[in-house]
Amino acid sequence: MSRTITDVQNEIRKLKREKDICILAHSYQGREIIEIADFVGDSYALSVKAKSVPNKIVIMCGVRFMAETVKLLSPDKTVILSNKNAGCPMAEQFEKDEIEYIKTKNKNLCVVCYINTTTELKTVCDVCVTSSSALKIVDKLEAKDILFIPDINLGTYVKNNVKGKNIQLLHGGCPVHACVTESEVLKAKEVHPNALLLVHPECVPDVVKYADYVGSTSGIMEFAKASDADEFIIGTEQAIVETLQFECPDKSFYPLSVNITCRNMKATTLVDVLNCCKGTGGEVIELEEETMKKAKKCIDRMIELG
Ligand code: 13P
Ligand code: SF4
Image 1 (cartoon, protein in one colour):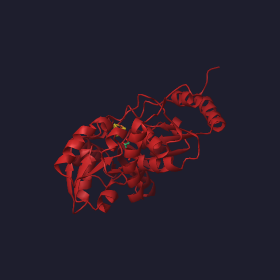
Image 2 (cartoon, rainbow, N blue to C red):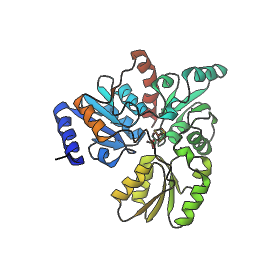
Image 3 (spheres, protein in one colour):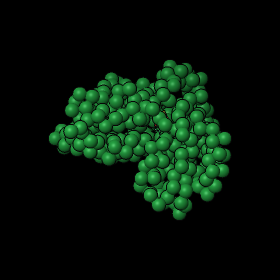
Image 4 (tube, rainbow, N blue to C red):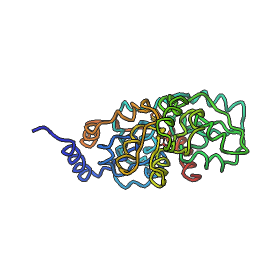
């Protein structure tokens, strides 16, 4: 008889107990993975959690920068990226040298990087942010001159909502969220006139301007759950539409665009997770000690200010 999803999930649960493994999952992961995870959250919640995980082995079901963040915060643990091909294209849009060059032009420049960046790039940044903590952290910084990288859309959202800063931006961004167009918003609002529009700040400003709520993955989920409204158009990854519909069957959730599916976030399968638990799959994250020391500073600062 062939194995079912539940059989594979049970095998994973057994191996987790036997080998002292913790599974962290970003909320864009599929339902079958969310069900076997010990903790599910947005990028910020996952990095805070990474600091306090008691287990010897941590499997990160998400993308590479998330597994690297866990390694930076828990260097003595074995950290495994669930699928070695799962990268975030936005994280690799700028090189360390480009940022160092910009810094030579203005010694007072404070470089704020979205957590969706490589460990290498973080070594030349001053503070990290996530979509849920960006406004709060940039507002708290003493520095006036800020370079926000790599996401021009999240950066524009911060620029429009934090006063008294001179914020420079570069042309980076999430290829998945940035695809959503203003005409898709108008169409979705026409089809669902009573629905509230909840949007991730990685979307372009011409989409964000129509939103009833702008926030991170967890922010969107919390808003929808707490709201008295019955219908919502969701402007972030398809997984959030599915999770919300699963968790709130009395409400209705519609995707803003059918194109908001992140292939990298969807790269991990349940069998990948099983193979990670067996020690035959995924990729064990190895980072140079000096690089880790430098990169960790901006993540520590994020947690301190966030
Ligand atoms: P958050 O988890 O901060 O909402 O970010 C979404 C995302 O695109 C992660 O890669
Ligand atoms: Fe990167 Fe965008 Fe995918 Fe998030 S959704 S992992 S930012 S490409």
